[in-house]
Amino acid sequence: MNEISNFSTKLTSFNETLRKFEEALLLVRDSQKVTTNPENLIKIQFLLEIIESIIASVESRFSKSVMIDELKIWDTIRIQSTGGTSVTKNQLLEVYKKLEKSEIALDKDDIIILNIIADAIDFECEKLFKRMMAG
Amino acid sequence: MKKYLEALINEQIIRGKFLKTIIPHPLRISELLSLAERCSRMIDEICIRLSDLQLDLKERSSDDIIDIYRLFRANLRDLEDIEKYGITALYHETKELEFLNKLIFKIHQEINLPLNPPAIACISTRYFFYHSKVNIIFSPIGESSFLLHLSDIFHEIGHHVISNKSNISKLHPLNKKFKEVIEYISDYYLNLYIQKIRETCPEDIPQMIKEIHSQWKFDWINEIFSDLFALFTLGPAYAWSHLHLTAKKTTNVYEFNPREFQTHPADYARFRALIIGLGILGYDSELALIQSKWNTLPYCSIFQPSPEYFFAFPEEILQKVTEEFLESLQDCKFKIVRPNDLKNKSQNEIVRVLNLAWEKFWNNSASYRDWEEEITSILRKNFGILD
Picture 1 (cartoon, each protein chain N blue to C red):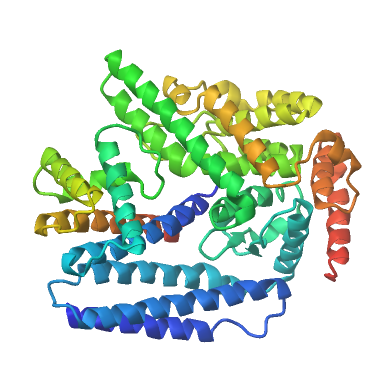
Picture 2: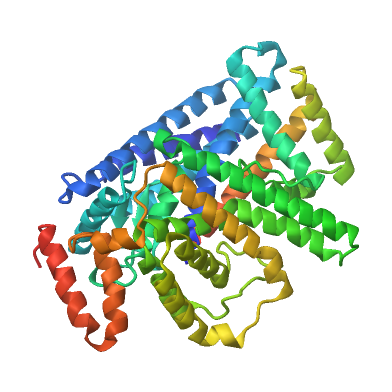
């Protein structure tokens, strides 16, 4: 009957997602440092999974991933981005396509949208944390 | 901001080091040693991560530190979590806590839990709950003197199992099943969504279906699993406990408001899963009795489920989830309590005692307390706890 169990479980999981996302973002933000070794490919795959779940949410495809609450993340991204829903969706699709082809040379806009995703995950974690601490 | 962030990180490293010094040693209750060790290890890990951030920060320009700032906040959340829920729990080494920690150790043996049991702390002001970061079940302080709601500890152990399903190899069948169940639920709501779009339904219905799917995936599946885990490893006592709590606390057993986020499924949906589970295990007479008691609850007759309720908690999903989770718990070698197993259990087993408590309560609720006091006293003596 107590909500703290849910909040703490989700927070632990989403905080971990944020850490892994940041690690992968750190890798792709400097394309000159990137080599496509297995470890880096795992990190890129992780980015792809997160972006795919958000795109699935935008396209009403009911993602099966549980790494982030993509419905809430997309709500936050939509509010944060200046270009409007379709522009933001296209930015997500573009960065997804590049990473899918292991094309690591991301441009400034790609990094901006990845940072917006990271901000949204952080925001969701902070909301869960506050609700948990209020309990 | 760069200098300020450096100072913020440093402040938290100092706080982490300080928190380690206030972890009480020596501890009186041996069952808390692993909690103290875990808190200490997690603080060390946070301090290392924060020190790494300090190093990264040195190489960055002031306009390029947002990721370090986010990671700082993630570590800060972890540290506050450990302070509020982990270390505080270590400061209340009461007899109630000693009893419940010995009790959960015995339960973990009885149900064949393939990992260490969580610790229990008696400082909850809001009923039972499990905190996954610090790995503690929080209980109200008075609960250790009563038996009827101790069944809820099994539900919280269910949350503990979920939290560890991907990192304990013996729980991998469950981890796999969880993914399959989420796939099933996702496909169910995708099909419903497509159907409603084709029917040109009112415009708020598709969004509601998306939100229901999200709540199942992140919240309701965990609650239903934890209920079923408790039912399958403890038996009817858990279903009675759910009914009892519903009778005391719930105002609308069909609660579902599409405009409001709710962490728990409606009580009637949880009850339905338990009834399905009792039926599968073969508790036919108990099922009939629990169902008849439920039907007499005033809030069951006053309210009617809304049309949206049936979108949120379809019988088809409850049936499927119950069957699948039972199979996965069997695959993980948990001891499932069927009617014959329960009859053959000795009076010393907690699973038997908690079920017997409900039999005694329904046979004669007036004299029940005398029996309960006697049994809790015997349990305490058996655990070497003197009043």
